[in-house]
Image 1 (cartoon, rainbow, N blue to C red):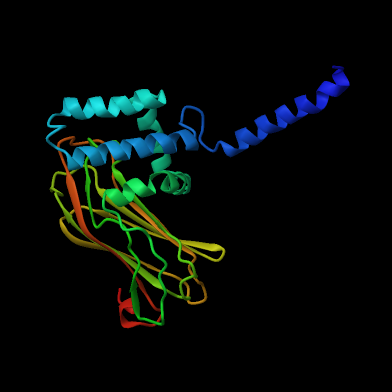
Image 2: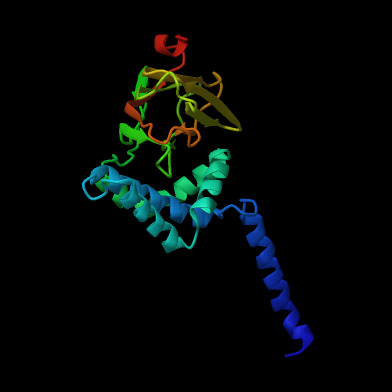
Length: 258
């Protein structure tokens, strides 16, 4: 084959390499999104196994062995995973891309673990609409390798203009000497605008996070996370219960309450 005949193939290879690099959003030293997705799915499954079958994993040694089996399966180290989890935790859009890709892979397993399958919801001009379709209980601990709960809701039809979204839950296990807080984060995508709200939790009881959208903006997506920052106080465990994510119509009394 002549050099002229070889050139198109070489050019195609270079183009593919450039396209691959452009699609790899993670910096050097951080697991690429696709690989991080696969590792995170197996880590979450491992943590659910531990939560549902404590008798099989009574000590940290058994739990650590299970986590290490996941790392061996994917050819990564715990240090690489920790660094990647920190980076993705501070780059929510990238984390949510991984989360959405993982949904197709684990939906059947999620159903078996107790999550309700998301169903289309309609407003029907109601003042309030409960849009949470996931498990209503979660534990977070620095010992857990995925100490973050994420959620992502995209309705079949955009929510009405000027909606107010309220994320609420009960929190237990917070202590006065807790060095790392629980963080709540809520976002909405409305036409060409993204609205955000966040708060940290440093006390037990009912916690609420409110996010109000412009009166002229319709909401196409609602997403966010609840995360236990850092890996301090390894013996600590936080319990989250009674999750609710409610959409209020513009102008309704609950929407106007601060």
